[in-house]
Image (cartoon, rainbow, N blue to C red; front, side, top):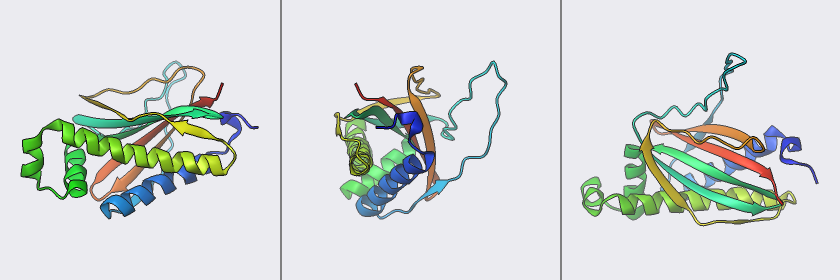
Length: 176
């Protein structure tokens, strides 16, 4: 079986694109368009920073998968976009949502992340890489990034959804 590094970029791009597009279209009725990454260069002594394109407060959903390929997928959203998505999913106004606090938004983002990573995982399984999901978790903050271990393969994809950017950050390694 090929290692993560040997699996084509095309396969990862297609599986995460389909996962994001299917979930956002089905659950929220929104179109998610993959944004092509511009070529970036960094000095040799400086590792490139992920192109998050999100400033200010962020809500980040993460779900892991364990099996033939193991890893985590982080979905980065600006906090305002996370609130809008939660309101749409739950059929609430922004005022109603604000009155409930961050937990309701966290739950909605966690569920969107779970569905997206589940769709991604199912496609990996269809290609012969069986794996299972972990439970979702949420990070909140500003101006942070996740640093992978040296053994992880990282792929970052950005999607335009209305006037917002969703960043899917995939960290993977060969399963044990």
